[in-house]
Amino acid sequence: MLAGREVLPSPCREICKSFTKRKSSSLKRYLSGRVKCKPCHIWTDYTGCHLFGGNPAVPGSSGWYCNCCNKKVRMRPRNRISKGMIRESMNRAGKRTAY
Image 1 (cartoon, rainbow, N blue to C red):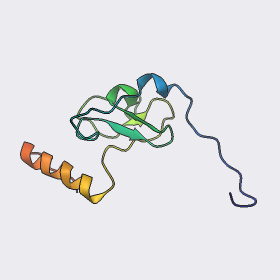
Image 2 (spheres, rainbow, N blue to C red):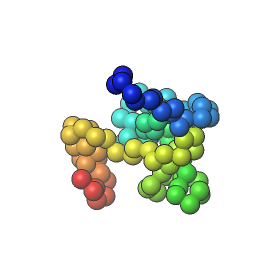
Image 3 (cartoon, rainbow, N blue to C red):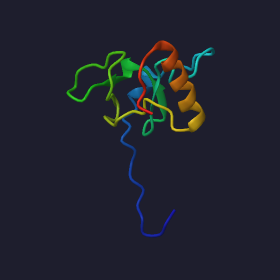
């Protein structure tokens, strides 16, 4: 820890533990509809998220926020290999990808 810096508390309110989802054995997480909340350190799906206006998230929508900490969740992978897998599956399904 750096001298003179204070550690900020996590925005997680611990209510996210009720909607944490386990990893599917056959599919990758992002392909199976899971999203990652970094502040809460959980994987969840649309049931643990809401949209910007406070409406419940639905599958296929974008711009989800965690119900626990109200932070935006990651809906797409960061590394090149996983992005390529998502891109290939979307191309096979005939959908456009943003990356």
